[in-house]
Image 1: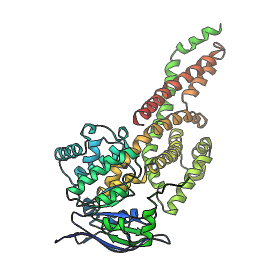
Image 2: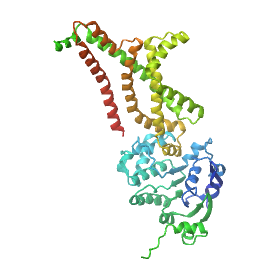
Image 3: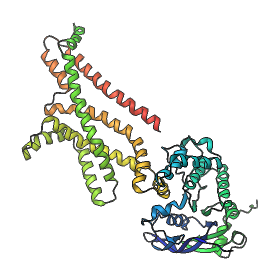
Image 4: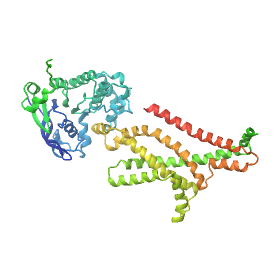
Length: 251
Length: 224
């Protein structure tokens, strides 16, 4: 199968003060592939995503999207960011704008698309995630799960080539996790290239084409979900997966 | 008869004179607030800079304004500048200068507070959508800051109006001074004039500040 590499990360290094958060990370993501990044908290997963769309400046290594380097603060940053959609853990909608305005603001102001065209697309996307009725509501009137779905739509409306998801369900009540994950599963089935940081192991296994396991800023393991979840190669990965399984205590 | 002393208000143009005095108070306050708001916005943005020199300057300015009673500042500008540099500022100009100096510091601190209260992820998500720094400020940060700020700025206006009564002491004839003049001029004919005149002054202040506070409260409710 001939696959085109869409995103390449080569020897990425990131330090905060004396602490090296990412210590030479390399991997590549093909077009239409879903990469799930797993690892214990503090392993650098979120920092990795923030480096990929230039929110953090890398201290070493390269990130290439379609062969073009992403440099935080670089001249092409604005253009490159439009190719990368990102959804964060915190509900980050703009509180002073209603749902439609939240979605159409960037297409209109950043991409200079017409208001009518942006609105039409926004309404279509909202319809797809089942939130068309909420188009004139304000973020504070929505539940966490609904806000996250809007945040996904807002990123999609910019027509990104790659979507980054940074623990998007971590702050949600359990019963709202599903509705957000379903939207992501649908996106994956439509061939969107995605990099997902998550703690939902079942979901990771279902959606991933490949799994990247990070620990202390390095890639410990890169494999298919079947292999990773049933037969992890490294001791760290085994320990990590064990923290998600429970045994019935004897009493 | 005590009660009849109320007629002092209707004698000659006394009431109009009081209103004229009130206008002096309101005029100084509004000019000072009008200057303080734009200057305070700039100062507030300056205060959020990470540069240590900028931090030092802001700190000194803010502390100086907070520690010095406004009255001392008024005297310093009105009498002091003339002595030291031969600048002959009128009392109104001195008052506007001092209250703007004070208002800018207060407003700046409010602006700083509003700016830093905008969560980090608002900047991040705007950046991730491809907004430039200027666009982020214009479309996302400023509108949110403005909503937090407006009620506070209005409260500052009422504080300003109340504090401007100090300008009497550099010889300005504002509402309180007009009241005193009326009382003094009618000491023998209307011995109880003080009660009525000061009562009216109280009401005049109230009717200027109360609607302003009311607007602030309404806006606060609407934008929360």
